[in-house]
Length: 388
Image (cartoon, rainbow, N blue to C red; front, side, top):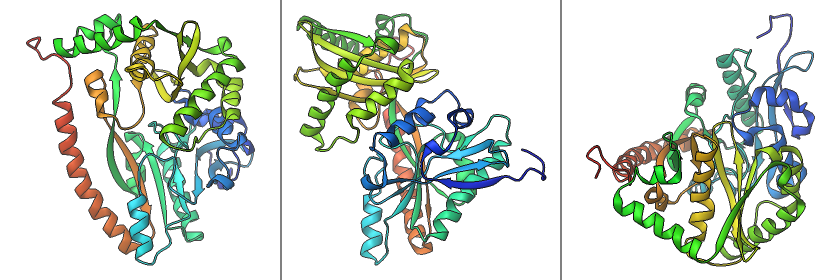
């Protein structure tokens, strides 16, 4: 940190474009693509994230007198709880039935993105603990000033838990399913680590897709064109129309990320007779591939597993990546070699009585989560030491 002659201030900005991308990325780092300036800017510039959609940017930045960025935190004022993947609808309902006003609330994470990553972005040469504490205090001061009910920070890394806890946030425990690369040399090498039953099941699933004549191609970097995005967006919106009703991302978003970070995109496309029938949108981190969105216009059994899970595993093995993160929920992923991974969120509640109720709930939920994690870890499909 600079000495006392160089004043550090915390500011609120209403667009990430008010920060130099180089400065923002110096704090965000290169490991996680979702907190990059390019990704967050694409969400804002496309209009997917704006006040009109219930996502009003209120990012915190710490700058000195020369506008050098020492820390930042993506922050949004929200009028709903959609697109977060850590559900607090029950909390909102309970608080409002008791006469409180739950919305608007503050939310710190990456919109529509259930991926663990830094929420307190700190320049490498800054004092990490001091910057993280200041950003947490800045969130709380902002919430107090505007009498906001709560602050919710989702999918934060375990390394930042202590900063939020120290600031008075409550920690919530949940889990996802991640595939871990144990130095596999091929997909068959991975299959050899599984029990015979699961190995046969996965092979049958993949064979069924192959026998249907469906092939796959991973497009990335300069190989991606507007034609690919036109096709994928058709799949994406069709799947949302059938399952969820409203797609969070628009066509412009995909064009913007393609323009600014194509080398971090892996778009896996499925073909039948040379025609695209499905696609899976992934982003690359420094040591992981993250599955985000998928869609299809043909309903083949096991097509989703192949496009989103097995193709991602193939890619991770071929490129020496440590893991595949395939999004939220889905205990069926366990039987396909994905293992339970603990996730965390942090919650600050302004009303002391409501905070006490939430704290009690989180303690009971944590106990159930501990039991469930123990159960899940005991039911992975990997062979034991006896090879069974």
